[in-house]
Length: 218
Image (tube, rainbow, N blue to C red):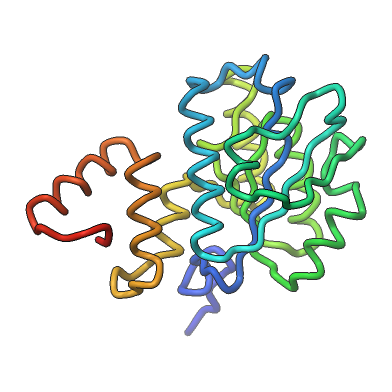
């Protein structure tokens, strides 16, 4: 007897640049001021690395803030990756209740949503749970998201996983989109992201290049 793989298993469960969309939610000073689940500079590093990953692979990216005039502008590192791109400034706490965001997602025709947000338990959990209920596959980038405490973050991740979300880290997103080092059109960009944001992986890649005597590529 054969079984049909679920949306979370098999080749089609893996992320590809052609089917994915990135939604970055509320990476703003107000949220950052009370974010205690992770070391702050690490979270900034990770979300900027994630944004650059989407840019290198041509993954459509939606940027959104909540009450920007009081909560502050989107993190400069993200804005620098997408200079001039419109940022949807909402009043709704739940991103998915803003029709502009949903319309922008629907316009791409993509069903695999990669999401990250500050705070995990509010800004990420609400749209994730609602989008899952509308038939989207949602991949939550847990190390580019953060909550007001470790417990808040962990309970939110647990809740979203129970609802059907797939937890993933930003470097796993990078690796899954690349998938094959023979895809040389993106290896230089991947290398630069790792050098700037990959910590020990970036250092190891520098060392490999030194040993091989090669240029910017992998």
